[in-house]
Length: 366
Image 1: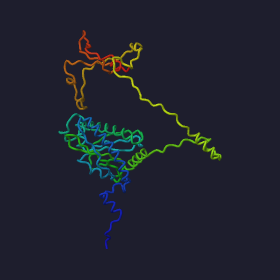
Image 2: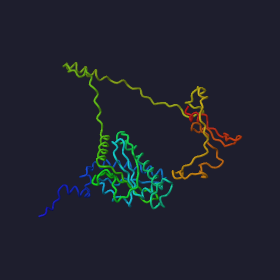
Image 3: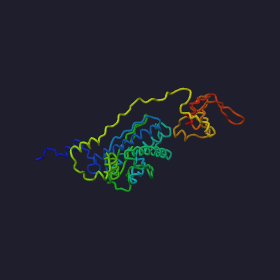
Image 4: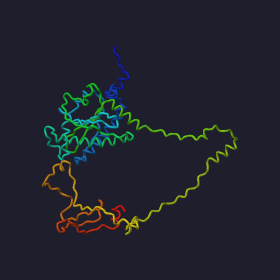
């Protein structure tokens, strides 16, 4: 007769959706929960860095934390080739780690970095696209490791010995020095860039190193017990018995009443006026100090791709209209505006507007 009742293990498996990740590979559900915070930090860095480089809205969300044999990783890659950014995490005993994306994801990231819209991508990634994708992931990892150091109690992390490669997934595993049965932690991050087909990033790490990372995060997050102050030698002596009256008098003497505190509203100096309150009276002592004067014609913002495309004959449009006054800066601080003139064979500036004396003193940090 078949037992129709379920045991506790079967009930737990049903409640967890049949997913027993971590139960036999070394990473527990608690470990995966801790490592999900690492994926969240990398996702936040991806959203910020890619959004800044591409000038677009980016949504980056961690979607999965699993523990699998590394031989199964190739089946998770969309397409026939994978772009792998490899590094050794300095600060964690040079733990190996990789940031992975499909070839299509690498092409989209590279095209966005070079000022494109990721709409018309080449059939295969060339050296220019691979270099751009590597630079993008390098900046992403740098930002993520800075944030990750914060939850590790200040342990300084770095992506040492970093490199990238485009690999055929047919016979590929993330860590070639390990067997295909070696288990790895995988944190998946879904990326949605405005106007671009979605793609994903995977952060992968061998399970022993992932366990070490999770343990260090727990250790850094654990509350620290305050150290007890040292006991003076006199207090360590055995107390002598005393009478009740003496004990009462001693207790009264050991708790003196605190004197009343005189509390009154704070009074601030009035702001404004034609004179700068912080201006020293002996400013003449520094009038002979040389400073650097810069004339700024205008500014603009360009993507890395647009800057790389500059060449002889290129025209860079600035943010000022023709005929507008130029800015005169002293040590990088605005003090005046003027118009460009020609004196003999040299350029010069005719000052047309000067900021107030108070503002000039403030701008020079006096």
